[in-house]
Length: 220
Ligand code: C5P
Image (cartoon, rainbow, N blue to C red; front, side, top):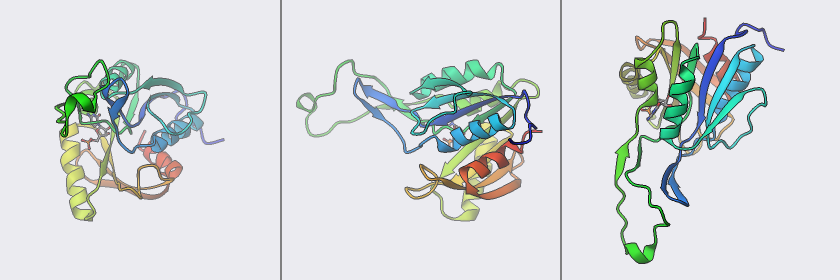
């Protein structure tokens, strides 16, 4: 088994992708599988941490010794993370959270017979969970965020990351490029880790498990 360098540390991780309900049978979702977050949970557990996973619509199984809180929407994830953050020393927001949700959730199925040829959805902004947790950070709490971007230019990708870490107020930001072929759902990941000054502290390309361990190495 791995070196127990995180023995007893309380690590809170969010994983998966939120689903924003439209009606009882439909939602707006995203392509996150939850793999990177689950590997983070698994690796933290192997290194001795006490792990809580707030999981949204995972496509992968979770190790049984991880305390798991199942959520679906961004609002549910917000509530679960805010509560669990009270007893966490380290928070890693690996989930893909919807920026917007439908303004109203229909009680019955939306029916094309009632709607006609075009359906306009009104969306409202979800709370930024990571920014909220960072603003409410307890002394000594370490907060790590992710930034999944489709930007292909390396310099512009870095600039986006730097702007984002300032806006979110977290300690580290794990920047990765996503497309239909990389990031989401795949076994490998390529990430750049920025500190709160926007300085690159690590660049890793490899299995999502090796990326997970590099991220956990940020914990002192
Ligand atoms: O703004 P963007 O979605 O790119 O930021 C990504 C980071 O912010 C991720 O760590 C994600 O989990 C988090 N996030 C959040 N709440 C939102 C949107 C994103 O915590 N509403």
